Length: 378
Ligand SMILES: NC(=O)c1ccc[n+]([C@@H]2O[C@H](COP(=O)([O-])OP(=O)(O)OC[C@H]3O[C@@H](n4cnc5c(N)ncnc54)[C@H](O)[C@@H]3O)[C@@H](O)[C@H]2O)c1
Image 1 (cartoon, rainbow, N blue to C red):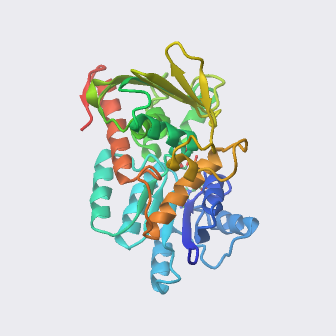
Image 2 (cartoon, rainbow, N blue to C red; image 1 turned 90 degrees about the vertical axis):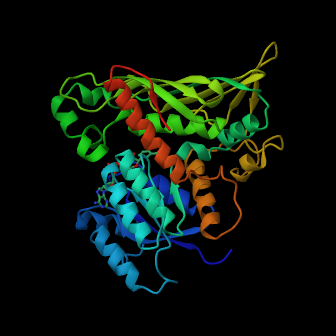
Image 3 (cartoon, rainbow, N blue to C red; image 1 turned 180 degrees about the horizontal axis):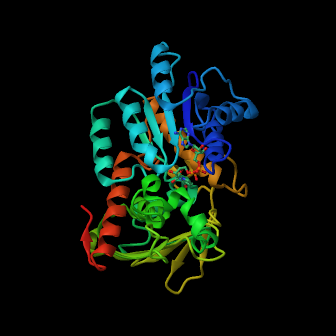
């Protein structure tokens, strides 16, 4: 390995939820070095935060346009090689587009953009560049999720015949019933969040996860969404029926008003021979279910796991992997791609996954608005 990859960060300041996850993840395998960024739109908070966490301040910029302008003045061997976008959703597209147009690699939070149209524009922008582009569907980095993907690909559970993903949170419950609070939450503002809250924020994780572990494609959706109040423009709960390739049927159950739930994301895939179940709040256990057999629990770090799974495990069995490790594994895959080293396509989600995620959000909302009808995704 040569020098560390120079990483810039957009968003993720002291007031953010996701910033710390990216900072820790990027440092996990000693591959990246954060050299600067714009962590907050207010200068005092931006620079104050950087001073507080002890990063160098000389490449902290007042805003995104200044970052591009100043970084381009630097010689290539000093310039940021990759920039992570951790801002609210509406900024992902303009930032990612300009970064790609100016030769930067990009790591972008999900949902990738606010519309499918923007996602397609971004895809064609990427095609004109040589850049690496990753979308952080964080949970695909877990070792036991990677194991699930490999087992399904190897035929260990036989032909997939039922898919069930549930993603329940409760954090919007105390907000949705208070008019003032719901007016001040960016995820409930279409200008900042896009056309959907619940499906856009967490339904996309479930959608991507289904396609990641099964390597099937969702072809059609039928959605029933819940907005709770007529003045609320963004869904906070919904159920989506799925038709996938190979005539496989499934569903996504998703809610942000599941009172008291924290981050209850689970994926259950049933095949003709066996079933696999995984829960995000207990991510080191992958349950293998078989007709007439005792339940088996597979765990990370053991030799029975696939190479892809073991690649994402740093310590021997019995040392639990968590959400930081999962994101760290995505950064590790991106580092390989930037360094032109070989990597498995399961190591990080790409532009294709981001575009499909946006297609899913729009089609789910369309299905609901048209009276709960089936809508094709492709
Ligand atoms: N992968 C995951 O599992 C996951 C989890 C949570 C959030 N997210 C995504 O991460 C993104 C951010 O979510 P969050 O919960 O951290 O949001 P947040 O509101 O907690 O934080 C957003 C941050 O962006 C900063 N910011 C806003 N405008 C900016 C600008 N113009 N320039 C620079 N910084 C700016 C804010 O100051 C803040 O620090 C969203 O797109 C969200 O969907 C992903």
